[in-house]
Length: 114
Length: 115
Image 1 (cartoon, one colour):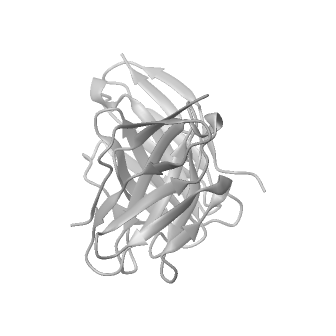
Image 2 (image 1 turned 90 degrees about the vertical axis):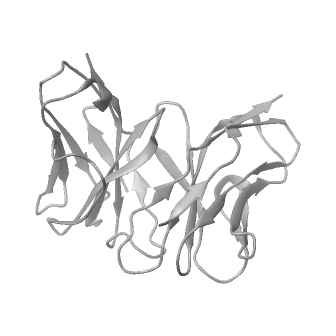
């Protein structure tokens, strides 16, 4: 069965420092991986996805993610955090095949302090 | 292009009642999926509709149902509400049926509170 894990409930970072939000996955076949962000009282906003190709994927708002097949990880990164990046981040996976809803991790709350 | 819209945004019901939530996808999108978000269980998939047909269903009781209309708008219904149904219900749309690398675009959600 497909699953995704976000091992950290919360990540605290100082503004201007690099940030990493971790995600590991388990899926049969080729994985399709996604990151979404949720601001308070809002729906989820798509940040980026990995389908195939380059292991480093660039997305919205300066975020990027690194796909590592051997470690089954898809960590979200940003070189310099902003206070406005503070939000809830979700990693999601969809297994290969024609059908497949998104399976979400529990979410990681990112807090960026000035 | 307008995003996914959901109505109502907030809803308060009492146990035993039923509720209908509405979702209008992005123009041109034909797939609509519903998710339930709670602090304890996180985001859980309810069902997906494409071209008025249910394609996929999550592990929820039969009290949760949905449908999709010819204009791709979707409704979900929850009957005999329970306290545990209190949640944020999110609708997501995509051009094609969910699968592969198709990303889904989410609405702001409907916050349902069951008293």
